[in-house]
Image 1 (tube, protein in one colour):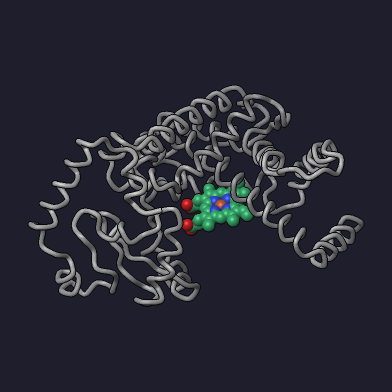
Image 2 (cartoon, rainbow, N blue to C red):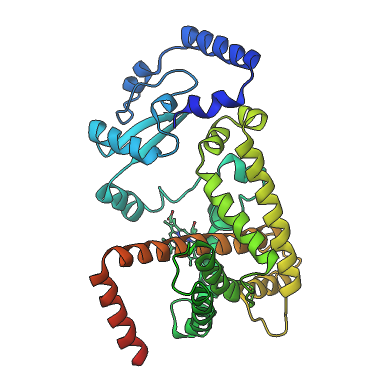
Amino acid sequence: MGVWDTLLPSLGPSSLLGVGVLLLLVFLFCPHRTSSQKHRKEPPGPTPIPILGNLHQLDLKRPDQTFMKFAKKYGSVFTVYMGPRKTVVLTGYKTMKEALVNYAEEFGEREAPTVAKEAHLDYGVVWANGDSWREMRRFALSTLRDFGMGKRACEDKIIPECHSLLKEISKFQGEAFDPTLIINSAVCNVICSMVYGTRFEYDDPDFRTILSRTMKGIQLLGSPGVQLHNLFPRIGRLFLSASKQINQIFTANKNYHLKLLKETFTPHTCKSIADAFQLRQQEEDGCPNSHFHNANILVTIMNLFTAGTETTAATLRWALLFMAKYPKIQDQVQDELSRVMEG
Ligand code: HEM
């Protein structure tokens, strides 16, 4: 899906004419970028046009596929103009490893997309940078380990959840079904038991709502409409319904997590990551430079909930698909499970 397929349906005839005239004027009067590209010796790339840059050449639904084509033509490091924004794309294992491992400090920053900034989500870990990011990340990782991540203690949370999941699966009595919802629920419950010290019934309406909003939010983040809004904030706010939708989702999720933070807080037992963060906040109360303020705590907790659920659930769904397709691998997995569980 190209930029026009996304933008055109949202525009009325007069807006369309206005955009057309504007584009024509800019095209005629803007200096062409190719010469400056050569002049500045930036990595090679496709020739951009004013305003849109190379957006007209990108499949906005699968930009990765267009980037793979560009990589074949221009090499593993190339320049693409995402609208007016110059972007250098790195592709392939060797290049990525060199950048992210050998030059970790230089490549460590991550820009928060416009939609995240608008919803004040550029705190926490995922969309933050600098000292605040370092501190939140360090504390989140060490607390995750304290609550069992990567250790046997985590089994106490995973095994009961597996039983609940099996019970749900047995309700389908061997008939085909879409496992997305119950796998999301099971994974989210394991994350919730670490993050909030509590789990939810799969049919709990609030749990279902937060899960489906979270998944929808992640899906929208990669949608062409939201990507265009990130590049052209004014156009997005006026025309693109996806950017309005994602804003509503982020705001509703924030409110729900705020409620959970308050309701589950048990300072005397400190039974969860959320408790640990809030206790640390109390310890640092009055400290003017403390990073443990409300916005950082809320967004870090939301980051763990969201980043932990979608990724793990999607990985498990892929695993199921591959096992259904390759029964030999399925047998090997079953053998390994039986061996390990017996031991
Ligand atoms: C199969 C499961 C998972 C996959 C494939 C996955 C993948 C990723 C990837 C690719 C990144 C970006 C790394 C980077 O840009 O440097 C990331 C970051 C992150 N993940 Fe995961 N993840 C998984 C599970 C989890 C879980 C279980 C949690 C938490 C409970 C989690 C929390 C995070 C956080 C907080 C970040 C941001 C880190 C930062 O910006 O410093 N992820 N994950």
